[in-house]
Length: 277
Image 1 (cartoon, rainbow, N blue to C red):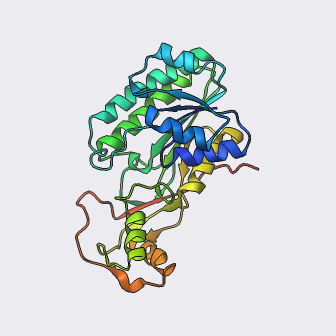
Image 2 (cartoon, rainbow, N blue to C red; image 1 turned 90 degrees about the vertical axis):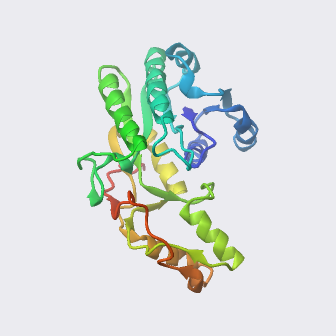
């Protein structure tokens, strides 16, 4: 198994699951992440790469020699600008070259990571046949990557799976996101200032999401796969659930600020994951 983004928020959980299931691991990582991965996954082969999206198809063919399957979890995700960054386009072209190299190396299964932002939003029922219509560069580039790989790989012997992530939370999450912010405030006994919290979301713990992505290798499920719970939960309900673990709903202040103009009122998926035995 070759995994990119192995030290990231989602990638770590994917590798955890693969390691528990006994897969041989080949992890592509930037040099600063190598020590952490070597400590966590002692039996893994580490392939250090400063910018994996700048590599050629020939580079990837060499890295993929002897690899049965790829889970490509790397992407540009700087929370400050990833939604509209031009670097998303670099990820598209770099991923295509990776797929070209994988085909040349005889890889049998390519698993990519998509996003619920590929769909036309808002919606409380996003199945895999729901209309697409991204409103961000990030969503547009993810959808373009899906279309490119789907058309390219269908003429090869490589199975293609595309795991669309919804709203993940949990261990390793960027501190600027909602869940870490709530935990930080609640643990410090400080007020968490939030919006009205009326938007509906589809939340899933990142550990569960990582396990589902890893298990696609065993199920062999191909095509678009919604990695989601299918349960509509308002942001307010989610925040209250976190606060209840501390017994401190009194620290939640709703209506302190307005939602972002592009923040959809509802993003809820319909799961279609074929669970592994």
